Image 1: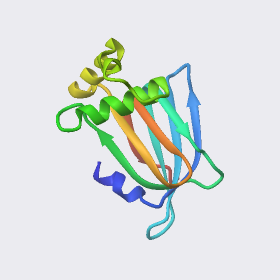
Image 2 (image 1 turned 90 degrees about the vertical axis):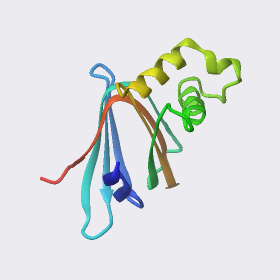
Image 3 (image 1 turned 180 degrees about the vertical axis):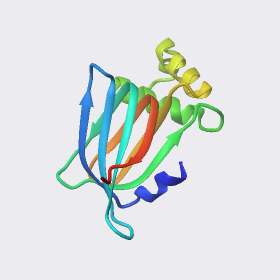
Length: 137
């Protein structure tokens, strides 16, 4: 995730979703040094949300969340919020679908990231593969 730190103050320029292939492509422009275009490519997407998308979307940080202590509760809370759209109750944290996702995150077969903004979109993404690649030609 070290390369992901370079996305601080990058802009989200566009998002493409292919629901039949279960893929999400997020186009980003990094502003540090020379302007560089990057893409976040997610495959095997299980779930995905974008909140507060605006014309200008500036990234504060990208966080990968794990399902092991001490992050287990926070990851469970955020995954549940992404899927169901509200904060979980204590009993919601025992929901079999959530427990299955947490186990897959623990095993490394799913990755959960959250892109938090300085301004604009918050993105949560749960997928089999999430890569950051250059979009330069």
